[in-house]
Amino acid sequence: MRAFIVYCHPSEDSFTADIRDAFIKGITDSGNEYILSDLYKMDFRTDMSEEEYLRDAYYRVTPDPASDVLAEQEKINSSDVIVFIYPVFWTEAPAKLVGWFDRVWSYGFAYGEKTMKTLDKGMILCSAGNPIEKLEQFGFLQSMKRVMFGDRLWGRVKKTEFVLFHGTSREKESRERDREINLLKAYEKGKTLFDNKEDEFSLEGRFFTVTENSSSGEVSDKTVFGYHQKGNVIWAEYSGGDIVKGFLVGTIDGEHDLHFTYQHINSDGKLRSGHCDSHPGQVNGKLRFYEHWKWTEGDSGTSVIEEI
Image (cartoon, rainbow, N blue to C red):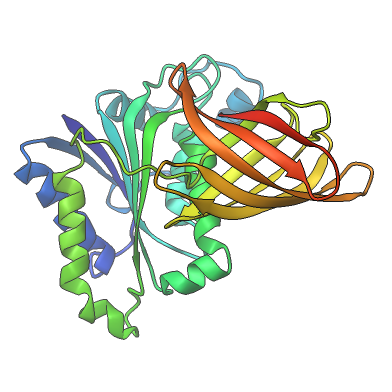
């Protein structure tokens, strides 16, 4: 099995470089292979040319992408998983990695009539100076996951995993205190990258829409739910159709049943709320939840949401 690693950091004197090396050692110790694109060492050109922009903007497959882009695309299609290793710069990947997506995710390869294979897994290993508590409290971690998984890798990989190494800036005590633990974690992620064991069930970063609803319900197939999970706590934002903005919060139990309250503003400007119990199932490989809900004031009903 082969991993394609896209590494992006301007300096070898960095904790991110140590993470890369530990991860690669894990891959090789497991008897697997890797290809590495070190974007700074390659001096990968990340600014789109006008020709590249017009090609994608007009959804054209000609002219052929530049040779450096074709080389990256070939690395993807010759691999089983893709891994991105980078530091967090202002709640985002470094500009060079963002530019890599701008050019490599070209029309006819990553979207349109795609020639990009669907990879078994997409993994992010990133180092962040801030502690995870701050990243979660202000929604920064959620934003990073949504951009990488909800946009760049969505529909292009079968499984995703986000591995965060937090509190790693030089002035943080935790950088040296947790160094060996973090490097062991990176090594183990490399060593088990291709394991076929069932991943732990989680709703984090998953999106759903409605396939069925009772007549007294307000959500529809135009409504999209973006779910998050931490431990047994789940929450989601939803909007679309007759829903201007909605939120739900609750818990998930050992059977993966959901129990939550919800509230939203509808297109008539009314605030509606209620509670819901949902039971999971699968249809054609897609996760579904069969919901039984009741308005705080009003009718009860049932609905079905399905993963997008």
